[in-house]
Each structure stands twice: as structure tokens, then as C-alpha cells.
Image 1 (cartoon, rainbow, N blue to C red):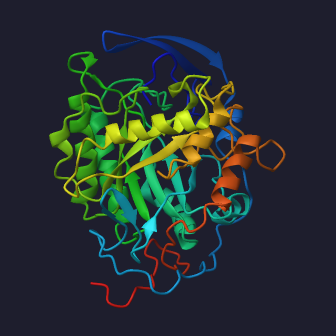
Image 2 (cartoon, rainbow, N blue to C red; image 1 turned 30 degrees about the horizontal axis):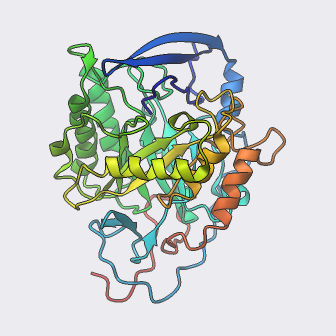
Length: 405
């Protein structure tokens, strides 16, 4: 997320293998342009691996099918025949209102199995799979199939940045040239691979830069053009599954300067708004933070799609702005996110550094992870997905509601 004051590193296992260096930028906001001075510290590569995922030895065995949805669900005809948008909200293939209650998983090392995720976070219905440097679709398929075979919706999103840091915080520039072509080819490839699996969606590049490489200046409209290219790459592959656009937010506004016309023709799409404690005054209550979240979501929703109002989901959040130090107001911020009704996917499975780690170093949950797990477990109906049958390929069979078209 664009940040006034601080930008946070997001620890993915790719790290900076040639140096082991992770960068943290401290930024000021003057004249509408972030000015950043980067400070560096060393993080061993093994620490990065441990923070992104817990190494496991279990094979990705076929999973048993989850409990089917209750009978009598409305026969909502989603725009893509799977998950769909109506009136600014998501609906499942069976027509139930779908609220996201999930987590982030980093791609690298050995990602957790679906069984491990559900053991720690019962009731989870969503995984945001954060990948970088364009891994091949075939390498992703085994993990994605395992997750979707257990009824977990998977959003695949790209954490690559033009400067190679791959950590979010709007570093680098908008993609151009050969990097842009590689980016678009990758989206088309994974979209083609998973186009028959309604439980796989896609996110535009994570926390993207707004700097136009042609001018060196901030150009949010150029970012909109790039996001539309990524969306079109997915759709051109024949994949109409859900797509999330990254919403760059400041404490009082989201998507400032975005080109609304770029999104006017898109369908089955939503905004991904990242929420960290830096957004809020440290003395705020959870209710005050919640009010500000609602205002930010309304700001993002000023830009409409062909479906009308787009859903807003908080697909990244945590207890640390930097990924290292724990923010003093993290509990208020997290409670506001969990109570927002927008759906959420906190960062990240693993021990963090130590910020933003959902797990402790002893095989259990951190205090932060326990808060998330309790919220997921008590969330009640989350929009039950159709019952899936475990499958070795990316095309699970679905039970369909009587009367669907």
C-alpha cells in the first residue's frame, strides 16, 4: 500500500538471493509525490524462508470433499457461471452471499497444505497466494489443486516489482518493455491453466508503483492502464473468474488519480484494499479505525465497473507496518478489519520477521494469528462454496443447484 511516513517490506521467500538484503523505505509526502530514503538491513535467506512458510514433509495427497452447502440456496446466475458480483458483493456458484475469511500464503519453500491451513484456521474459505518472479503454471497447479479440492478459493497475485525487491510498498516503476510482456504472458498462462476451475481468481500486481518509467513522475492514470492490461490478459485466455485490482490508499482516500474509464468495462472484479496500522492515529479505538475503513472503502467504490459498484476486500492486513516491529495500535486496527464486513486475508502464514507472522515459532499460533483464527472460527456462514471432489487436475467437479442456467 502507498504509505505516508513508512513503507513496509513483505517477506517472500525469493528475497534478494544474491545479497540477502531486505530494504525498508521511509517516505514523506510532499506535493503529491512520495519521497523515500531507503535504509537497508541484512536478513539471512533462511530467515526469509522460515518467515514465509513452514517447511512440511507431507505429500499433497488427494483430500476428501468438504461438507456440501445446505439445500435451498438461491439460484443466482453469476456473471461467469461461478463466483459473481451483484450490487457490490460477491456470490458463490450456488448463489449465496460470499464473505472472504482467509489468509495469505507466500510462494516458496514448501507452502502449507490445505489440511494444515484448516487445522490452524478452521472455517477458512480463501487463500491469497503471493508469488513473485512469474513461476510457471505447472509449478503452481499442485498446490492450487490441493487448496481448491478442500473448498478453498485461491487468488493468485503477482508480488514482482520492477526493482526486484518484490516487497510491496509501491517500489520501482510501472512495468514496461520486456518486463511488461513477461508479466502479461504470465497472467495469460495461469489464466488459461485454471480457466475451468471456478475456485481460482487473480489479483493485479501487488501494491504497485504509480511512477511512469517514461517520465519518472507519478502517473496514477498510467497505473490504471497497466492494471487493465493485466485484467485483459486474463480475460483473453477465456477466463472469466474473479479479478481483484490493487487499490492504492492513503489515510483519507483510495485510488486517487486512477482513470475511472479504464475500469468501466470490466466485469466480475473487485478492489483489494490493504489495511495496516499506519493508516490510523495510534490513539484510535477499533470503532474509530472501523469508521475510517468504511470511508476508504466508499472512496474506492467511486470507480465503477460494468457490474456497477465493485466489492472491496481487505486481502492484506497485519500487525506490523514494517514487517519487523509490532505496531502499538495493531489490536485496534486488526479488530476493525475483522469487524468490517469487507472480508479479509491477513499476511502471512509463517513466523514473520517477527511482524505479520500468523504462526509462533513453536508450531502454534502467534497472538496475532490467534486473533485471526478466533475471528474466522466465529464468523458463522461465510458463503459456503460448492462441494468439490478431490481431483488430480485443475477442473474440480461441482454439485450444481437445480434450475441453474
